[in-house]
Length: 251
Image 1 (cartoon, one colour):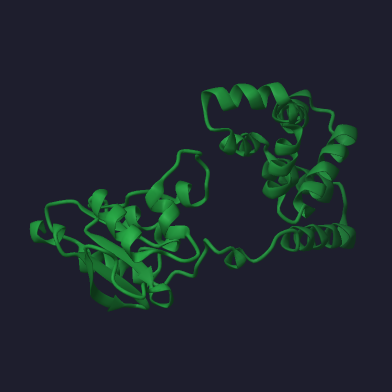
Image 2 (image 1 turned 90 degrees about the horizontal axis):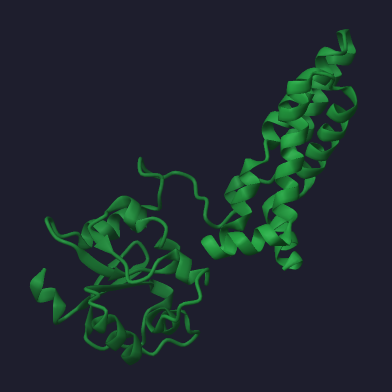
């Protein structure tokens, strides 16, 4: 359990540099800050929240009332940015002339190099349209959309977080949380799709049982033969869309 908490902190802090900077700022304020209300806001509250987060009992209680995998969100309560910003202002205003200029420049550089490029994350992409999501998602959703009714489609992993944002009429049999194994519930269709060698018959039968009108896969992962109950419908933006030959009659 303590290992789970420490792993969450490690994953949350990224490069760890901003955490070091935060601890340095807390230490500086502990020595230099005299105002009682500011000490409560910028020192005591962060320390109390961190102590609560590191407590195994808190982790157990949180897991009882919610999913323990989201426990890291309590770290959002730690005012990291306000503490660093206030410390930077307090430190720089205590200096004069060239020393103040150097201090401000140094703080700016330290903050700039403390992270990494946001687009290095697989879930972050440069905006290519007004929806801020991949063009392929927009084009595929438009291709299978049916006005006035819901359509169920089995989407690839990389689309899980976008489909429902763009078109709420397109339902997916399982979401991104299942692909990331956040929940422990078994899902035979998901397991069949993430298997290294997909069985077209198994995937087709399970998708049909779940009422999927479409199956969408990257072109390089296309099935050797169409899934059972499905036929190839469209090749768009590097993705193959398979259409259910039985359920499609009600679209």
